Length: 125
Image (cartoon, rainbow, N blue to C red):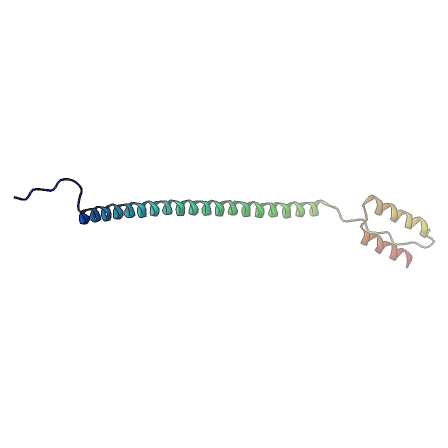
């Protein structure tokens, strides 16, 4: 009866053991890499989703602010009375005094530059 040899394994046994260890290490390493990549992908997707949500909130806030500004401007225009119409010049009117009055109204902000120019042209014609 042949007995089992004790001691170091043979060359083929050593090669087989090395192949099993290398194959197991490769399989484990590949599994770890796949799990890590899946985690990274999941984190990237979560960050992209968060950024999309934040951008949507920013867009909604900007749209709401624009609507509020338009509404406030509309309310202001409805509450602001129209500027007074310049009086028609009567015969014998002191033109210098009328020009001084128009200048004072312009300085007070009651007349805009365009209204001042129109009133002055009407007065001088």
